[in-house]
Length: 230
Image 1: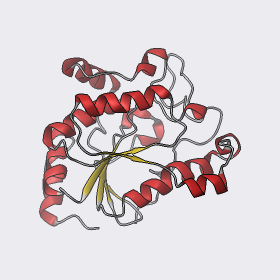
Image 2 (image 1 turned 30 degrees about the vertical axis):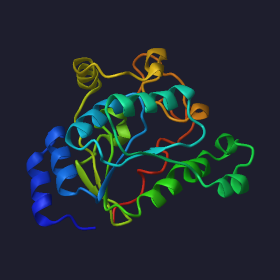
Image 3 (image 1 turned 135 degrees about the vertical axis):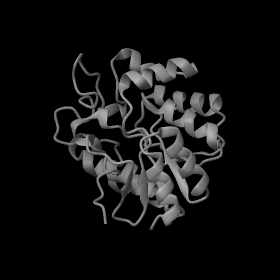
Image 4 (image 1 turned 120 degrees about the horizontal axis):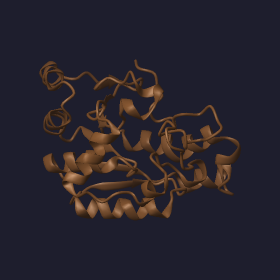
């Protein structure tokens, strides 16, 4: 997909102002854009900002079947509090689960294959009707994300928009407090980044927030954000 020149100019003019980036994206690309959310530790701010502009924006949640129960409860709570009208739970195909991970242990010996089955493939299918998607990635989350742009092209011809790239954990925390947003219950137990239960652990003070994801492995991303630009 190519962003129309006028939309691209508006996004460029918005700079790193998250509210303005979202306003342009959700109004000018309405019907062509979805918001992908993990309903994790920092998800509430993005969802709140988006809901103010368009509470009917499609919100895609990867329901892997391996989430903490707290995450599933939090997904329900945030959708209700923010009046999100179109939250879609994306699940791996049952046939694929039976063929490739019938015991639910694929994460233990091939986490990349597990993420492909439970995240990458369901999201790829769900994104077919859309030309663009919004993510909650931030430069402060990890060293591997420090070069993130606001708008990026992906290898499948779609556009990815990252409105919160310049926000720090302190700013996010302050905004959640100001808005009185519900917090993911696991954040109080040392989980600053929350993925599937088998592959997520708490982190120690001063550690990279994503150190608890796939701990002890070289893996740093689930796969939905590693497609090369084209």
